[in-house]
Image (cartoon, rainbow, N blue to C red; front, side, top):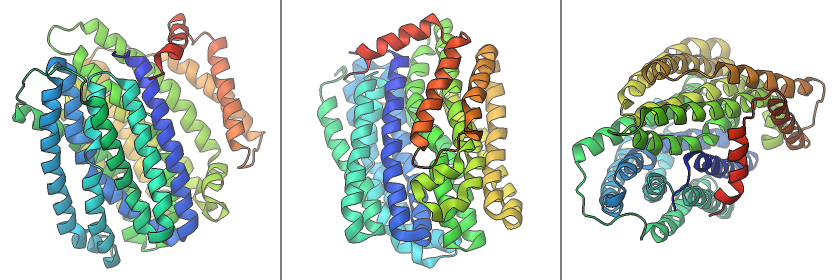
Length: 479
């Protein structure tokens, strides 16, 4: 049975929270076990793996989500063709990674990285099939199973990495991604083998690859943007320990971005279905408006609270030896919060067939970030690198927001934004008085989160529609 879009978004956000939680177990563990220098190398190698893996995790799979959402009766035919395409693309990308490994290593001023880059070529291929099943479930609006499959991947990845890191060190940590990918793909095949229509259908490769390529390049660009500062720190400062400090802040700053990927996975197929020929424009506008309101309500308090407790957050996950990365985390939380909002807007315009707009803005952001980093990093080191990403993200967000609200004639939720800012200010204010230790930080977050929701309730921001949605979660979220 199909699931409603907003409860689906919540289910996927919860799944992303699971992914984040498990990720924040393995990342600090690697940081503590290997030390700053080797953890810095891990961050650089993982960033390269993620950048090249974007084409496999979000290129063809996202096209599957869009096309299946618009052609449910042909779902199985689309799935089978997409799997064949994905295997070919996966082999090509893995070969490209192997060929470029020495080049990337030289660009980063460290020839010893080549062996790691060659190794991740195989990892990228093995984790490339399960995203097809994840996005197929999204296109069919089976958001609960999509959320569960995403969580299975995260758990398997964690267990694989923990099992292998003590034997193979850095190689073992990287292997966890392959373990998770293989197990999740197997489960995905089992779950999807009888979902959707079986009518024959031939994918129009031109339109399929046009969307897949454009959308993948957008997400590839965002991944490059999120990794560009770390790469520049590694190449320009030539200090693995500083790269390790910076990587700890980068990892934690991506909380809001990763958390809201769940909502992004719902937005793309939902907007695609709502904006197809003959669909109701009013329904599309209402859905986008509601999604943006919930987005603002999630992003603003998370970003501000994490930024105000950056020191305790760093110590909680990485220990006192990474404490000097706290000011970097404060700046990056703002930048990645802006980039989270940008990601959601990019999915809206892509789902409506305007992906090229987000693509052009993303390319401009990469160029601007490189220019800023060239000046800021030599002068301000890690703070300069964090500033380059934050300034660029804010500029890109403003540009895409202006286009989105104007093009879709969406009324900006000004009153809701004001209420959310007020509630956030009241909830965060106690952190300047209540100096919780890192051990007590989770409790502080729970208390202040409850305070934030209470303030929203008192000032009337929680509407009857919100209450009905909350009441429906109990029967909607179980698989």
